Length: 357
Image (cartoon, rainbow, N blue to C red; front, top):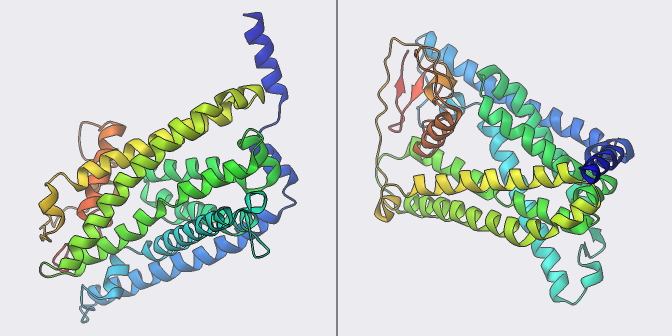
């Protein structure tokens, strides 16, 4: 017991990666974060302006745009611009940095594997991608999660910011990686390759709302999405068993138990959700992945439902409150079916037609 108490006091005296990143970052991360936050704010304002103009045209009985047009789709989901930009940029840069890193390793430059033709790849990740990504998560909380009361997505964004912020500066990364800056940065970059799934899911959503009949391209996209979720399961399992767990003693030695716990929790949670979504994608069998089927959504036209109620995140009108696990499952199901992003102001179904409230 005395040894545990002694360890606790030593742990309390140690710094943590979040504190070090904030204190020693010289404001570089925060400055870039502010710039990117302003850019994403513009994206959100554009999306909501398109939604307002579209709704005003419908309300005034003027001829609305084709429900399958880009404007109508953005009006039905005004956050899609910012979300797609974020997923594409982070996924492309993450994959690109890893390719350049392994090219350097293949050339035998093990000591300078993170420097490609004079460009510090870790520095690019710390000063460009992480502030860009975390600014998106914060902006999405303000423009989507809080107004729509989407607690689950809000929780996801907070966890992402909490987990990746320390990697944004060497003083924070050295504690987050138990002394190994390169490894923890690699871990962060590899994790962000999962944004490929988000980008392709957005394209799948576009197809669900614009296709009128089966198309071979939809089957290809569907299979790629399912494969990407399966790949995420394999990736996060590998990271936990091969990369993270064997380093537990290093985190204990450096009194970074909280850091290690957060790292394990984050990878395990995302891995389990990825497994469920992979199963969900394949629930109709392999053949169903190749065939596009329109799905009519049944909705009471006289009932004004909030976004959260439509995706199972809130049951204000129901006497029984759902558990958090059921809300997560309902949200995932709605995401896969393409119905997640339909709000109570006017439901757009897979046929591309508008259901009035």
